[in-house]
Length: 258
Length: 355
Image (cartoon, rainbow over all chains, first blue to last red; front, side, top):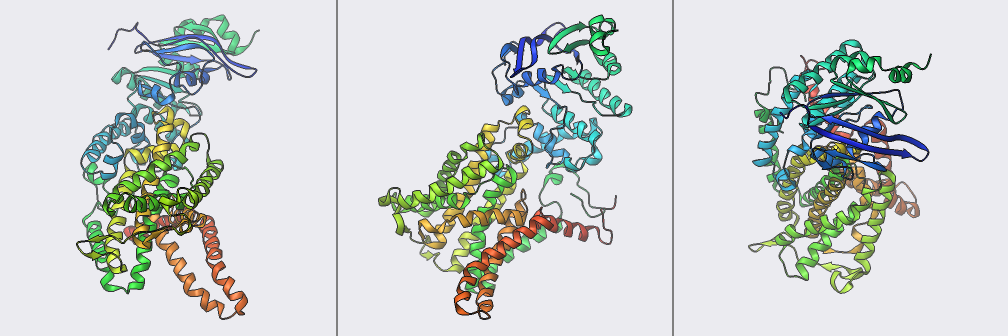
């Protein structure tokens, strides 16, 4: 593992607007190798937009995104994924017609190599590869404690379980950096703690860098190494959880002025 | 998928296998033996009907991969089958190749044509894509009619010799069966394998959530075009089978109505299921044959001037009603009913899987 101070993902002066709405106004952000960075901010602050720019889902009008020394600002989404950027979604974006198992297998798309002809013949190469990747996926299923539902269609699962499958699909990609967009939204305390545990475990076991958007400040304070605060498309503060807690700008943005 | 109590998968290979128990193997082998002796059991007329079913099964696999799995609706499937048929005819008659080379090359040509007409899918979805593929139907059938009549034969089409192996001609249905049925079985095997491995999962990913698929590393551009290529590859094989069956190609035997029938086949059988394509093709062809038998009988109750129209209209009316009934009562198709039935038998006397 590289030392803690290498910058893995750097976002420089990103501007994004939809007609009149200015979603991001010159946001710069550096994510260091192996850290857990939390991005917080009120609704509509531009947090998800920022991740969408990194993923190549939105194109920034100005500014650049660099991942491990490579400019990815103009790359298409699937090429960015191939570089090792995994992502979960705020609103669930699973393959609802597939089983949990197949959702995770589909997450390993980039790691598999079977082509059209090998797929049609199946036996031999494709079969071997499927078994090999199945092992990895089963490990993830154990890890996320979703064994009981592995063969169920995702469309039939409860919200909390779908969130886990979403996380699992992103992990199946074996990303070098994981972008989590409100992985704990709408969950109760226990479910949140489960997800927080998964995030910390993955971080520890694989050394994956993690960028997490989260509203629950208590949780953010517990798991994040550093916190970045966005408001109205601008970065208003950055620092350790302790610094953020007492920052007057942040308090103003979240609680309003006295 | 649930198993009878006490039957456990012991490794991943068994868990992923299509046939996981000895009983299932026995059933499959018994079925294949049955298929092998069909021409000995049934009359030539029945074998002829089964031959047509085999062609429809292959065509339906293609549309099922394209529409059922990858979610790219196509109302031009019959025209793509026509492309396969015309490619076969041209390869055999104008380039002097034999049928077996044509079986190799015609589907690939069809796949490439399909990719060209699949290009709008990169921008269009659902209803709009349906309109674009409808255009493919008209462009292609018009091309059969008017483009290069010296080569593709214009309105009268081309007469293609029947395939032969060592002096045995596949002209009669009983012999042709041994050409068409193994092709259908093999293509079913291919379709199932595509559906259950990396390519099929990518197709479903594109269908269920195209944005997430792109972010997860599945190139939308690449996989939509692959879906059109694979779907039309199957259509090309079906086209080759049609040439072997018809002994000719003509611009009017790949009509729009057939494209819609094909959509009906996968709706009735169950979209996104390999078994569904087979069930659907068999069901729709049986329906067609029953209408053929029923309309003269019904016609005898009506005055002659209505009876003629009854014969031509009844098929479409029955088709429309059946598709509507399936959409309302069993939108997941015959496959779903079949799965429920299998579950009931497996878990008998329980209704649900024990444990």
